Length: 285
Image 1 (cartoon, rainbow, N blue to C red):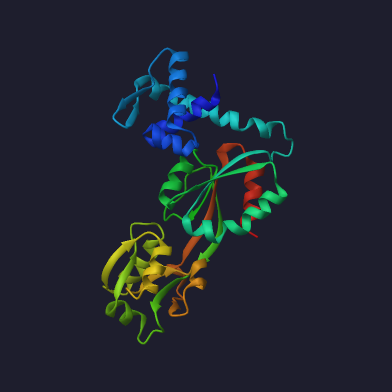
Image 2: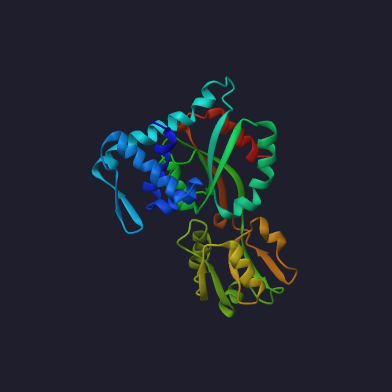
């Protein structure tokens, strides 16, 4: 049995459709279907129920899933087993969008130059989604906003960056932070997101009730809207804050309790200790 077929089966279950699995596996939908059919012939049992464009596992498929994940995980470790340094194999890293353009560009050259045996598989996503994938062992590590709760056992945290909260406005401020927030439309960093909760806490602590123009969990888009004179926003002072147009102004909020912490979470259960140490060293350059 080809372990790649099991990987495709897992992808179909996780993605919810053959088309989505094909995109994630960089294959055609026909190739994914053929792999599933081959598994079903070998096991002599249907693994998926197809309804329109969506699929769900059968009882047999559900029973197979845990062992399939274990087998795929073990196969991924084979290359590292024959390398005494433990620095060969695939490292699956989840990364939030701001770290993709902020932290990763400096880390990637270091990793590829010093650890050529490590093959990186980078998965973009929100902090909440990446944490869940890490907890489910779909990822080996994740770069995300530090959660507000105690992390699961087996995960290790490394602080990478502390980003103070700041007010971003079009033009230099002419009033206090509170007055500006109440006088201009407010482009709100989604308070349901892990990063947006700090801005919301600032508003609540100071009893500020701005007129919300919209909610966004995308700092790049928030910067763009401010630059187009659509309003102001409270955001962490992330990398792109230095790239704002000269017409935009950043007013830092010194109180550290509202800072956003970007952390590297690693999964101690994946059996890739040396590769994770290499990643940690690269992220702390």
